[in-house]
Image (cartoon, rainbow, N blue to C red; front, side):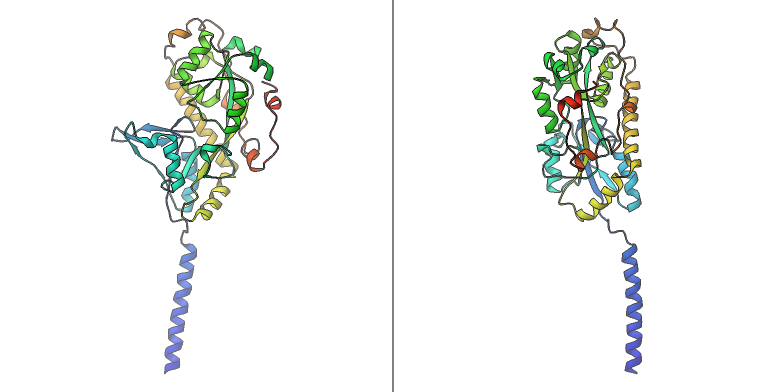
Length: 330
């Protein structure tokens, strides 16, 4: 009788244990939803805007969000958008945001550059889906004057502090003795009034900012980017199940369709902003230039954005091009 009872007990236990083990295998081990934040004011990559029923709630927007949410759905976890309340919320400051990520209060950060001090302590998720192309921006009549590094050094260059650059690019900019200004409006005014000969800045960001001033079609961009900065999504090292999430993100971000989706979002956001601002009257400082030929705009589609051309440069630790090599062909 005891043997029969023992046999029944073992049969029941093993069959249920096998069932439980199968359930564990099928259960999604990535069970934690991750929070995400990013550069507070750098469209189209990452920016906060008012939204929702409450007038003082800010939501994160940007080119990375939809593609990232889409690819993560199949793993059964969500990416929660951090809600920031109040116009003067200190967390709208990039340094405060980064502290939250490093401490683990927020898991993901959009728009980080590798080997850049402000982002130290974060784990970059390789590969970068795209690079931020930095162009030489001028008025149309100045475009033909710039062909080499020597030409830039002879001219008066400016950079807007509102933009975010890697430490490497900032060092190279300072070698040109550029002047840093506070706002895009100030930079455009200096170009149009002749106080500056060129502006170094992101093709995407400056198309959007200049369209708000009604001058987007009057600016000229170098045929090739001066620099291409791989832009990463970074993850907090104290994220629960960190290694498992890293494996999934690396697999997904390496797929060409993810990079294509991010690029499409960039183009959509930029073009929507330009269309929205069509018809805005330019400021008075631009009147003298408005009779000049309209600049030929470099379109986003003409900028190489494949992972092989951009994001993998840092991952493979390939030898960086010299400054002269980068400038060649501008």
